[in-house]
Length: 254
Image 1 (cartoon, rainbow, N blue to C red):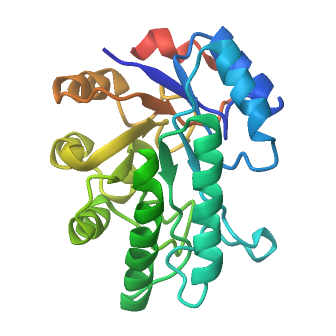
Image 2 (image 1 turned 180 degrees about the vertical axis):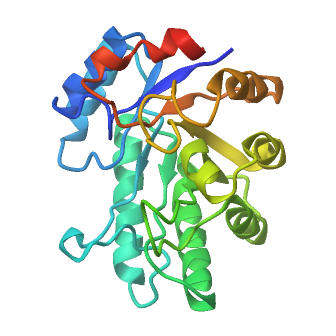
């Protein structure tokens, strides 16, 4: 049975994070997730979660220097101190609000040195996260939205997960990104399900509500259920209008 999580990085962005949590609960979502909550006091987020009865499933490590267009630090050679600070920051925040997944953002890099840098930083993060029962996630991003991002497909992520060999490191399987980069989503889901820690959806190619575009999520969600996935499906899409006006997609595909 499909359980939906609202990604508050894109949904109800006109509201504060605590109020967006409340809006998600009012709309019937069973959980929430976010991108970068660090400007909000964790006590305020924790109170909103407790009040609404929702769990915050995940958050991202800091992107780095936004003025320079950075999008993560963990694969950047020479930036290990900053990357590890971002991992520590994410773990501290996650512990404070009861979140069990952290997306470690790799950043814009390429080559063998970037690979080894990411692996080393992930090992550091796992040593810090595992005592708290926190899972680290790595996510391939597509080359249209994030040209130059280090992780570009699920097979590359799977190789890193196998190399590190920890059950606390999983793939963030974003159907939007991976349809653009690899396609054949049904077979890719079957292949990657054993290492997938979270799944996200959005329309392709618009990244709007998942009731349009080239993927039929009615079939994909049934497949995910049949494959035995017990986690939440993250609704990480950019609404065509207001978030509330676009929520008809839930009844259309779930």
